[in-house]
Length: 221
Image (tube, rainbow, N blue to C red):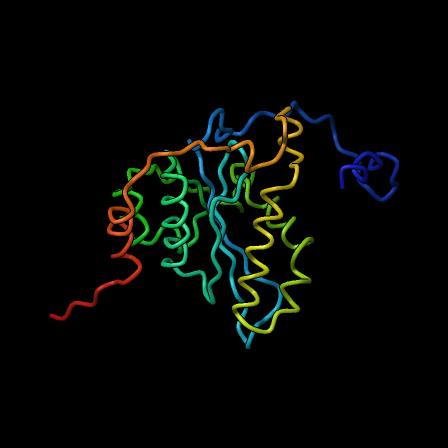
C-alpha cells in the first residue's frame, strides 16, 4: 500500500489534490505506556452457524500492542467488559479509554465500570471527521487482510477462537510500521510495551468492579 501511494501522482484517474498541510499528531498520541487504550470491534465478513460474529480488541497506544481480545455473537456490553477485565488484570488499567460512540461503549453498565475503575472514557464519532482520533481502523484492516480467510475456514466457535488468538500472537510479535517510523528498536509491539503496567487492581477487586455489568440484575416492583 505504501508503494502504491508513491504512484498516485502518475495515475491519470486519481484526482489531483491541493497541497496538504503538515500532519499533526493526534491528541491521543502516547509518550509513555498506558495513558491511552483504544477499544473497538468489527463484525466478521462471514457467518458461523448462521451468526456473524464480532471481534472486540483493546490496543495500548504507545506500543500498538493488542492487550486483550474477545469474540462475541453480538457487540454486547458484557463482551467489551470481559475484554477490559482481561486487559486490566494482565496490564493494569489505563488513564484514558478511547472508543467510538457505539451503544456497547456508552451504555450505563459500561459507564459505571469506567467510573469505578477511574478511567477517563472519551468517545469520538467517525462520521463527523473524527476517525483520526481512533487507531483501531488500521489494525482491523490488517486483520481483514491477514486472517479473515483463515477465520472463514473455521466450523466451530472453538476453532474461531483459536484463529483469533493466533492472529493476536502474530500481530504482537511482528514489526509494526508505525513503530518503525517512531524509531523504536525493536519495532515489535510486545517488546516495546515490555513489562510496563498501568494502574493495577487485585483480581477480586477488578472482577467485583465489572461483575454487575456482566451479570445484570433484574428487579421487580
